[in-house]
Amino acid sequence: MHQQIATVQTPGRGLVDITASIGEIVAESGVQTGLAHVFILHTSASLTIQENADGDVLSDLNDWFGRTVTDGDPRYRHTDEGPDDMSGHIRTALTDTTLTVPVRDGKLLLGTWQAVYLFEHRTRPYTRRVAITVQG
Image 1 (cartoon, rainbow, N blue to C red):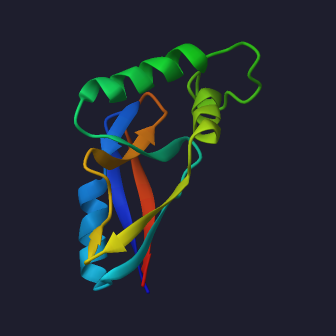
Image 2: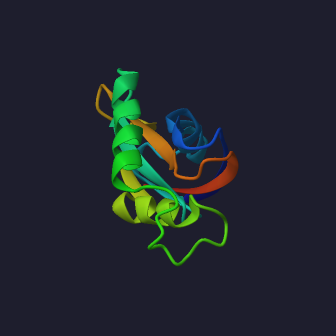
C-alpha cells in the first residue's frame, strides 16, 4: 500500500484535471493491479470523473451548478466566508469527496474520454489537498 498527498492550485471556481498527478503517484507506488482511492481533504471542493475531450462538458457543468446552486441565497445561514461559502458546501454534497479508480498495468484504468477532476466550488483560488491511496 502507498499513500501520498497531492497539492492542487485552483484558479477559482471550475474543474481542474488532476489525472496526471494521480497517475504519477500510482506509478511511484509500484502497484501493477489494484485500486487508487482518491479523497479530497476539503468541504467546498469535490472530485468527479468527466469527459476530457470536449471542454464544453466542463463549461456546461459549471453553468448548471451556477443556475442550480446560487451564491448568496438569503436563505443560507452559513455565510462566514462570503456569498460562495454555503453554495460551495452544497455543491460538494451533490458531487463526491472520494473516488476509486482501478489500476491496471501500473496505470489508472480510465475510459478513452475520462479524466479525474478536482471541482473547485469557491470563486477565488485555493490550494487544495488530495490524498491518494494506492493498494494492490
